[in-house]
Picture 1 (cartoon, rainbow, N blue to C red):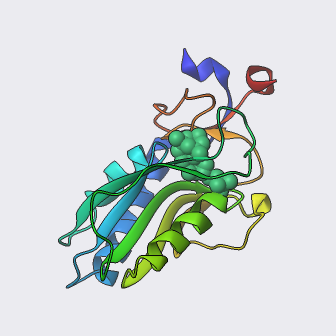
Picture 2 (tube, rainbow, N blue to C red):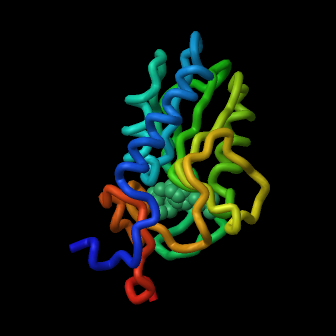
Length: 179
Ligand code: PRP
Ligand code: MN
Ligand code: MG
């Protein structure tokens, strides 16, 4: 069903699982003895965050923010809107932002600045995917799962018009679907 709309699989389910294990080990080391606040950016980060936190062997807390910039299309509108804020106080905390993808960089630049302004002890970013060719503002993640080419990717949290987030892999959508 969903698979009919996919032109090619970019990152398989096995590769995604292996990456969660790999990044989880690195983060377990880097956050040893700390109590990080893991901040998932809804909605795209959900599948990656769910797999990643199970691989981090440290005390951590979890909270979520809702930000939106795409508004249903395939390209960013340039405007970032904060729709739901954290429930947890940020001051003095070690923040680990979890994202599915950095494209233009606008979402993460906005969020990283917001959380630093609230006097976090540290703000780091882990992103499953990085699309360097999409970058409009300067921001880099501290931890990156995979670099992806400048194609419209869906699955494992990433959507087209709110669909395809539930694919277990990352794929490239057929042009006829979004044209
Ligand atoms: C997507 C994606 C990232 C952001 C990346 O979220 O999940 O959060 O855009 O794009 P940028 O680097 O150009 O800012 P979106 O706003 O579509 O919301 P969603 O997570 O609910 O799909
Ligand atoms: Mn998102
Ligand atoms: Mg989206």
